[in-house]
Length: 523
Image 1 (cartoon, rainbow, N blue to C red):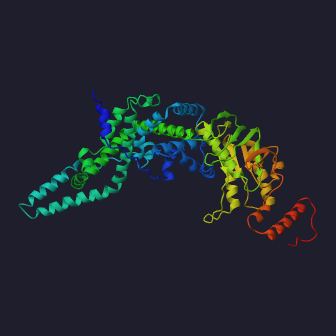
Image 2 (cartoon, rainbow, N blue to C red):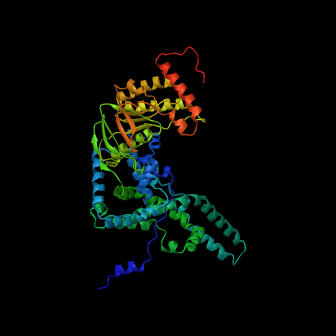
Image 3 (cartoon, rainbow, N blue to C red):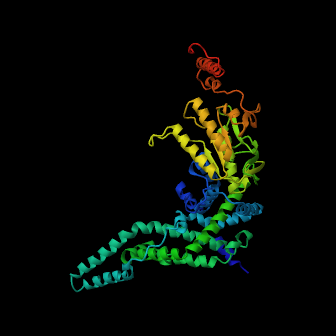
């Protein structure tokens, strides 16, 4: 017996890949903005920026719709409690065990989501959103095209009928122009919702354990999608739809109709959103991990301990794996200029975030606290606000102290208080970091090596060193010798400038040891 379904699939042209719509970061962040946990445990904007998490999230989002991208963004920002994280880990693990063919089949069924060219989280999750009431004139809208037709017929008997025709056309055009700016964006929103409903219909009855939650939803999703459509004639003959819009207000009446359909079906649409977006996000993570060079499932540890063995940053190819083991104390990290202290902090921060959000991180082994991360790495002065760099650093330091006072957190600080002189920088940094480390797990990097012994009771000293083979290693201890002056000649400043810098450095060293020169240094 002929397999008509297979024959029909063979005769149909191949479905084109959906275009990659350029969504703004504010669109991707909309779901988190509307559903962020109210306890303040989500990542704040400076931390998101300092850890370059936007770039990492983009690396996960190849062939992912706005729905899946919003969920990935929300997971990274909000994290997850133990039970929810364990459930995600189980789902991702089951996807990793699936064959590539099964994963590709799921990916194809979710392809419809990528045809959505607007985000719909605001419509579905904003408590303030509601459908506007039907205007009073809408119940009489059908009389306008009848009046238009009647006035045209009346022209056969009297030219005065043109006045009635002009009045009716004026109202038709006025109403059309009044609502055109609203109808266009809403039409894109209903198309996006229809793509969501189409994915639900395709996943219902797919026979995979991972899509059991979709069972029985396909028929309702299909019926709802059809109710949002303008009908086969309008969809197939755009010119006919345009005439219907101008002379019968078909688009205006459909606009109000679909607004109230979406409002009435919001709960079901939200269910469809979460099912599709969560599955797409899990699938994206599974596909990502299959191509990752190094990763592991992270165990959750206590708030004052951290173990990371050969941790790497997934966006840096060939990076050295660095290991860190902290118990009860934070870490003061030193190292030569350009050795990668800031990169290490970003690597550590990213792994803390992914372990808390997804259950995995990029290392050989990891036991990490499931805590919010607060970073201070890229403070800048502001010409518009009249704030110097030091004032900006002080403001961010107050935010870190407030976060640590509100609950357990991990604080990552890079080159604290660069915006003032050396003596005041050390004094302010030692006081702030001492207080911060009393309440939070702190990892700080700095060129001010004197902070190491000053804060040894709070922060264990660690240093990044370059090995002879070119790799990096993180080991206990404080950097013994800096290389800022030596880099002058290496970067093309010439031997004369380097010699002058060396003389000043030696003079400053004598000053620190109480060997005060009787005269000023003569360059």
